Image (cartoon, rainbow, N blue to C red; front, side):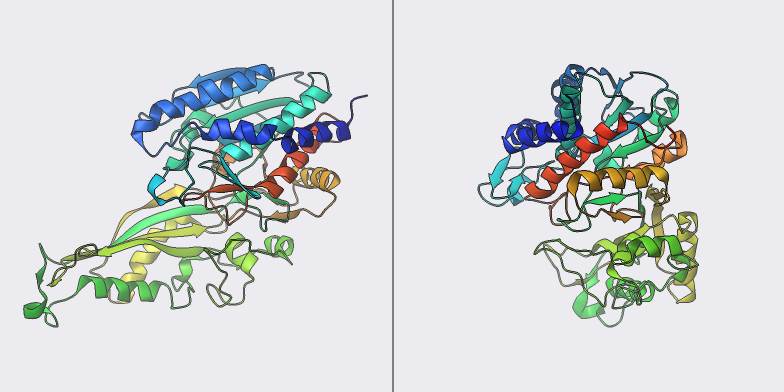
Length: 465
């Protein structure tokens, strides 16, 4: 007789028998980086050769659409409709990756070859996001096999290929296809857990706001011996301006950038006791960095941060004895839904003027990815947590938004779906850098948890059923 335990057993047998690893190896082997125009054919191939045939075998109808924005990757949609009276779930993933950065990987590792070393599976896209949507689809396959080809609910999928370029075109596509994509809830996977060993559900993401600070004083550099000490150094002006925006311990001094009423009570409650870590040797949590009085979890899941992503003056790779003509810093604010990013640009302009830095320009300012958040108390969130805890036999940590960026706002704005993100990775996975990897333990738990979720969606007791 078909059973929930039987479905989970199927999924774990597939995972433990190296079937999943081999499947992931085939996905990683397609160099579908959207950040290199030369690999656009590989981006298309990922959808048409790797994903579409798999979904057809699972009983989906599949279509691959051109991106509404010229020069960006296609978008795959799929649906498996059993009965309009049943719940309809939307899931999401992205098949594109960042650049391979082949020359920066540890000797013996290659971004487009899955390499297993202990508990780590190395390869570009293993964590972000090929491994994560492969976990979920493999779990779905186990449920279909156990139930004899039936799910007991309706499922729709959006798999884009421009997420690593800001999900360009996705908003227009979803807006134009809102009826076809209508669903009761979005349940999908991307990003890291709060700790490798702690299953996590995130109900949104922080947004990203970018801008440049520019000091441009003259047409060219001037001799440092003749002019040093006499003429203004743009790098020193820029660094001084940055020192008024954030203090030496990371506290944001432009207070109009921050939630006016502090961390909301419902956010603080869900983050009580939430651990943060597992970032590996490349990163550390510095307790005295950032906003005083907040826990580490509140700082990245309930507050805003300011980061200088890049800064330049002169030619660092080939310095000359000259006072540089200009300096530039590319800056980013990660923000929650509790602040309005439309005021960020005016706030920093006002602040710089008040601090005497009218010669520092603010350029290229704007939102790259909007923030999103579903109430952590939403019935779909609670239902998913209960399903996962039943499958895994351990507590699931809920966070109000992940620390990174995802296009959840697109689905909230145009489809009105609650957001339930179930990440299968961890902070130390090195996504976007060399030596990206998938950690076997969270991946194995992920396939078990998602198999349980897919199974329970076909049973009584889902929200609104």
